[in-house]
Length: 264
Image 1 (cartoon, rainbow, N blue to C red):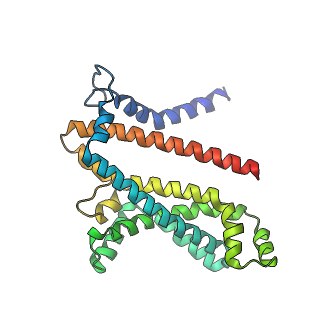
Image 2: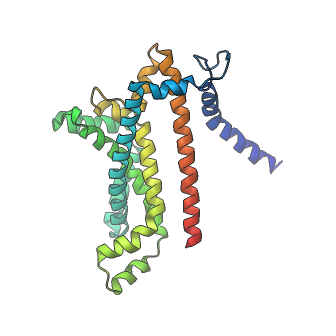
Image 3: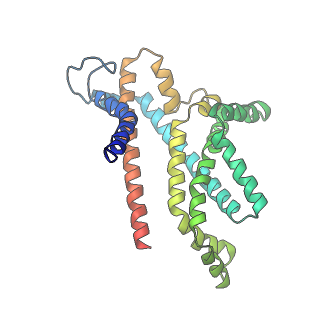
């Protein structure tokens, strides 16, 4: 029983997490108009509608472009912040770590209101420039990159950096050739986490996006309130595609990370 109960509990937790996604994926290959209704046959029509609808295509492309831009900026800022905090003295390090934890713990709605008030109302930046949207999402994502890179810095052998300086390397050369290569797993993890957070964000996007622009999260929310059945079922297919892409990315990342450890 001691061996069976932990396995049963693990299976139960995994079922709660993944069963709804699997059900949605199954219904994306059917002609059903609502989850739970009777199915008369299998079809790929939802996937055809997903890629044939110009409005959906533009929304998906715009969302992914935004996520890539935000992830790149957040990864650079989060990585530099983690490195700076790691090599700082005790008091600055404590202050930086504490300041980084606030956006992580803080509710998204508070961050969304704050960014909206600061950039759009006080500074008067036009929402149609995408600047408030990008800055808002970077504020959301960069702290998570910081947290992903920080453990790699702790595990790193600091003597390697000092040895590079003793052998004649400049601080910037030692950073690029010694420190950053050891942080690649954390940087990649931080980038992927930022990418996912950008795709998933709703509150910050709602308050800072241009009126003519929609991401997947805002589009799905508005579509669920409408009566366009074709759009709703196409979004089932979109959810399935995103889930499969994330699973594939996680598998590839783990394989590459394992090979990197074996080579070392």
